[in-house]
Length: 270
Image (cartoon, rainbow, N blue to C red; front, side, top):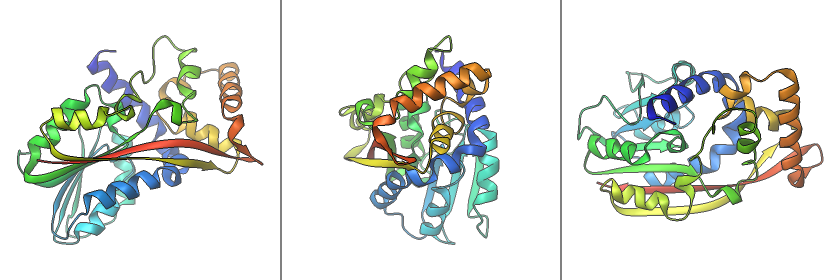
C-alpha cells in the first residue's frame, strides 16, 4: 500500500474507531503505558512531544508528571481522536496543546523538546524509521524517545482478526502490524534513527474481556480494522464475528476471555 493511501486509511479508520476505543482498550493497554512511563521518567518542567496520542490516555499522565511548568504537545492523525483527547485531558495554563499531524512529518522546531513518546502507534505508520527520525530531529541533545509496540504475532492471541478481515477485503488491512515487535526490530529502528543507549523490554500480558460482545468490539469496531469492518453487511459481520470467537475460544474463561498478548517497550537517547 502506498504511504499516502496508508495514511488516509489510518485516518479514516481511527475516526471511526474513536468512540469505541477506550471501552475496548483502556484497561488492556495500561501495562504497556505503565512500563513506558516508568522508562521515560518524566520530570517537572520538561517539554514532551507525544505522537499517536489517541484519546489522551497517556497525554494526561505526561501532563501530570511534568507539572504546571512543563509543556506537552500531543499529535494524532485522526481528528476525531484529537477531539476526544481535548475533552478528556483537562489542564491549566495551556500545558497541553493538541495537533492533528502526521508522525512522519512533524511541524515542530528541531531541538525543542526534552522527550518524545509514542504509545502503541508506531505499528500504523508507513515508515517507522521516518517517524523515529522526526522524533530525533525535534529532541534537544540528551533528549530521550520512548516507544511501545505490540510484540510478536505468535504471542498475541487476538491476531487472527487480521487474516479474518483480509479474507473479506481486497488488500491487507495492517500488513506490517507486528514488524517492529518481532525480534530486535525496534532496537534496530532506534539505532538507524541515530539514538544511543537503547533499552528494550519485552513482556507478556493477558487481555481481559468480560464477555464476547466486548471482545468483539475491541477486535473490530474499536481497533485497526474499523474502516473495513464498517463496510461489511450483516452476513459478513456474522461471519467474521463467528470466525474470531472461534480463534479465541482457547482463552475463554466462563463468559469472558483472557487473551494473551505481548508488548515491547524501548527508550533511546539523542
